[in-house]
Image 1: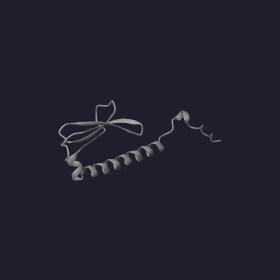
Image 2: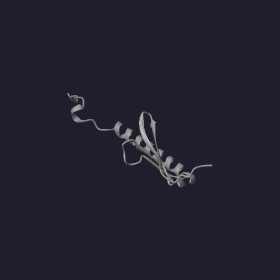
Image 3: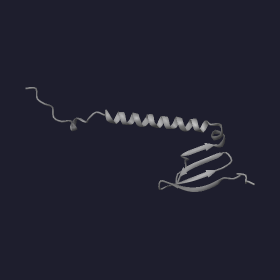
Image 4: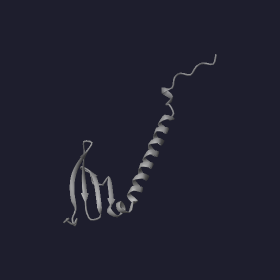
Length: 92
């Protein structure tokens, strides 16, 4: 026999030395950083069961990778501040 999830259940978990609160309820689950108010991860059971969650994870991973690549590209081509440039050679 199983117990129905009719009220919120909260537990603490530590991942890589950081504490999080995991909250389970009838609608889904949330993972919130310890001391934070806004959940970092929020997933409804219906999304998990329908496969929408897997698509969202894949899309998020793709967007994060694109942002990281764009940031690395911008950082690599950033202009050098004039005071940090080597002195120009004379044309004699």
